[in-house]
Amino acid sequence: MAKKWMFSLILSLVAGALFYLFPVSFCFAGEEKMAQDPDEDLPKLFIPRSGPAENFPCSKCHKYRPVNREKRKLVLNHTTIELKHAEKNRWCFDCHDGDKLRLPNGELVEYDKPYLLCGQCHGTIFRDWKAGIHGKTVGRWVGDKVFYVCVSCHDPHKPKFKQIEPEKQPLRPTEIKLIKK
Ligand code: HEC
Ligand code: HEC
Ligand code: HEC
Ligand code: HEC
Image (cartoon, rainbow, N blue to C red; front, side, top):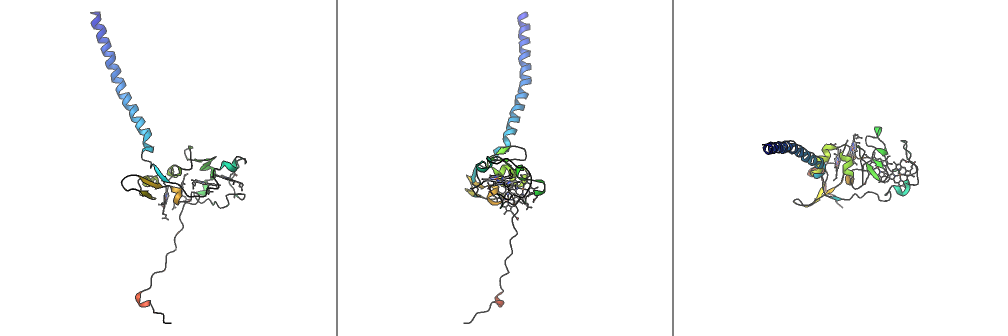
């Protein structure tokens, strides 16, 4: 009699454990998948930027200089950098930190991943870029695509393109005069 009682107790314990553990483990599996998602659709191959190399790594000079966070006109160096990118409420340190790029969420990334920086503010363009709608890809149509990064085309400090002067309209045939020598 006691054996039977023990048996049913164990059975109900096992059943109870299964009842609780299954949904919980499914939940965890779901969360893990969600956490991986943001990186899954990122391109794998890139055309490296062709910007000036002489200023890298930044620590080459900056390890000898105390940081000056004051927003000001730079005169000793970086004089070619003109900040025209929501500059009223922004300064260098919003994007730069030591030898890394600083993302709006505070994360630091290498200079070969500028698209993560741009992508945190320009979400829809970032999505289009990953899909190959914005920007440019080379390589294969079916197979490996190689992506130009945002800073291959946009100057991060002054990203807006200048308007192009339209060319003059072509001459009408009646306006063409033969030049006699
Ligand atoms: C060749 C030396 C040199 C290199 C390389 C260099 N800097 Fe500088 N940087 C300077 C000097 C000098 C100043 C001071 C400019 C001034 O005060 O007019 C400066 C100023 C700055 C400032 C203003 C804040 C401060 O502390 O004065 C920032 C931000 C900055 N540099 C970022 C960078 C970044 C980012 C890189 C790398 C991509 C870099 N620098 C590479 C020499 C350098
Ligand atoms: C919107 C973000 C952003 C801001 C704000 C910003 N930078 Fe940059 N900066 C970048 C990115 C991204 C790169 C990398 C470009 C590349 O790889 O070609 C870069 C590159 C640089 C470089 C190395 C290339 C070069 O042009 O010499 C220097 C130096 C630099 N920044 C200094 C500064 C200084 C000084 C300021 C403030 C006046 C500043 N940056 C503000 C994003 C920013
Ligand atoms: C912290 C948020 C932030 C980050 C990071 C950022 N941007 Fe912007 N960007 C803005 C805002 C706000 C504007 C609109 C204000 C302006 O034009 O100055 C803008 C404007 C622009 C424009 C001009 C749009 C137009 O035609 O008016 C371009 C292009 C651009 N960003 C590209 C970039 C690129 C490339 C990067 C990465 C190197 C980047 N942005 C990083 C906030 C950001
Ligand atoms: C192959 C070059 C190229 C690449 C790579 C590129 N862009 Fe652009 N981008 C352009 C051109 C060209 C325009 C249109 C400029 C115009 O209309 O004046 C543009 C426009 C924009 C604008 C303004 C859009 C608007 O609606 O006004 C933003 C913001 C922008 N790009 C951000 C980015 C970001 C972020 C990346 C990287 C994820 C990126 N771009 C990559 C060439 C490029």
